Image (cartoon, each protein chain N blue to C red):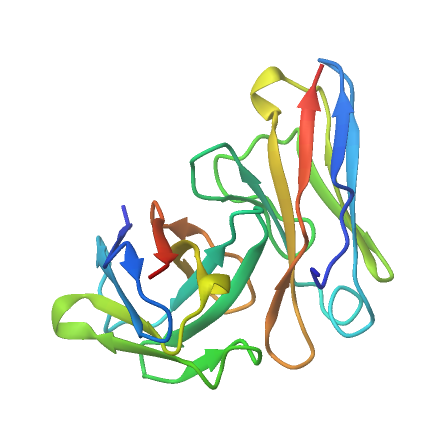
Length: 120
Length: 110
């Protein structure tokens, strides 16, 4: 059974870069069939898709964030990562990693989520 | 402001049926049959309940069903149970290969 686990700092200062990792177990990264994804949920509860990456390295980003984000994959570690630059308080959220088989938004497996607070 | 519109709250009594609408545009809900629905209990990750408008993942009760008409998708829960009390979110793939979510609906089982 697939499991996903987010890791990274819980507190980031304004204007700095947020970096998160998602470690995946129970599935091979080198096979197709999964779009490895990042989403976030704001304190007011709204959900936002950040982006995803296919095992081949092809990535797709939310247009509202594309200038600040990068998603990468490290198959040797069964990990994929998110970097979000120039953060502000508006980036405070619970960040989830998840997977969608077809890339069409059916996120079938999720991590538990990690709260990231942007504050000085 | 969320791209898809959902009511902030709905309520129903045990055993009843409720429907949650999710209204988008011809560029998202109305463009593809790639609408998903998620259930989220407090402090938990969202759980996929419906995908591709009408399909239930393995293990999801047939009390949950989805439909779509034009630019509005709907989630119906029949035979309401106390455990159904949660937040529900819709999402849709768009014509620009992005994903958008609704603002969420809080279901109260009274």
